[in-house]
Image (cartoon, rainbow, N blue to C red; front, side, top):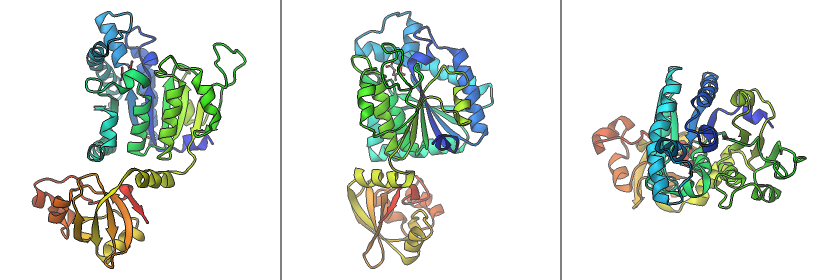
Length: 372
Ligand code: GLU
């Protein structure tokens, strides 16, 4: 099963606060440098990378000289705002030493459930990855507190894996992986090397290792693996302090815990798209566009659409109809119904002139399209 790791083309790597700040002693730049070297090597090997980095609260606390984590949410948020500056500076300078650019992205869970923001975030991330830049993502702790409260970015990392259709989510943590019992209490506990993410027996194992709120414990990591599995991603929970951890994973070494999805990428993605959305309108295609979708597995371009029905907004689900009214596909529209009206029948290079801007050249991108 480790072939899934060695062959994965798009990785989301999530690094937790305890690792990044050497257990609360300010940012561990040396450790960051070693991960960066390995990420650059992955990049050179053709892997597309997105980094989800925690550590803002912890770095802010150390900048402020606070030794104990405050309980007031507004103080945690203030610490995150201060620490985020140092965090992105550290990543930027470390990647910069290897001639790589980074980009800061602050996201919330809501951003990823709102269809319009989802598409916006997706386009930006795809563009950055296409430019060879490493996006560095954290939760936007000023406006939301989901991860400060519960997860230390585990859930956010899984949502990002869904968003960018990653093949692999690597959660670097301060444990070696998931064990079949708490290794602090049971010295004979065994590392679970491989399991299915939906295996119900994992709940009991993960339950024992989280804190009172489960903040960043194994429970949130298991939950993250299950979320990532929804878009067909594998998840590796592995010790970030294991020497050359990312290099060794890429080489196929059996370290950490690999949790696999129950379905393959395409099936999972279709189910995820289909299960999430109500349709808000429809597009009637010409015969050429129907053929391009069904046989060529192409995106739907405005030029192939003859009519627009309904009042959908950007990011909402629309039905694609053949000229005889038969449903052929469903997908997320890159343009609202009003905008679509103005651009149907036009070649994509005329979108800018018709609307005054261009979101994407496709009306529905093939990655956001499910054939029926
Ligand atoms: N987004 C937060 C951070 O980067 C989560 C971690 C925490 O709550 O300590 O610091």
